[in-house]
Length: 287
Image (cartoon, rainbow, N blue to C red):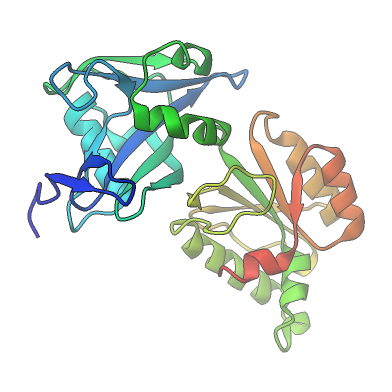
């Protein structure tokens, strides 16, 4: 394995020629202002490059030892001098051509970060609104995937009804140690959060992986369960259902919100607040 061992042309099953022997990835950095209006960092490709003069994403061939995320972050640094420190990965969209694929890594930027052409592959970098993007001459690959990617610009918040999920898991003796069972779930979700969700319920944009914010609502005997990286914890002062409804209300309306519970009454309440709902089996099957 060596750096740049992915450089070279490859052909997909459609008969198209693509750059990247092992596939390619690119970074879609998006920043939302206080009102939720997104801006995407777009790159204008140099005339000499493949599909030169078009607008697309900083990106390129991944090496044999790289996954999509480190490959996209490396390319963003090489082409746009964009560091990954102020970015949070929120999803991956996979454009599979058969025998060759391009992974778009979506990442929320903390601000409209400074980005400049860092090598000869680009001539301009700009933060553009979705409306502005559609007025540009786009790279054909990006133009094809943009309609599928654009609904996923907003991050995903997953709110877990911990008591309900622990009950649905029905491990032997869980009712004797509700705090322990809740702590176990928080630990598992924390470890799982870095891997991403590979199965998403109906209603969410179809990404290969989502990397959501997990919010876990605990109540009763589990109130002292501490948070862990990737899994924040809300302690319900009273009704757990009321705390979950309030957690939904606290999420900005432009973000995707998914509540995991099997409680019929709670499902109706959070749906009325605009959230999507799925049952505990969906989560437990992925842990």
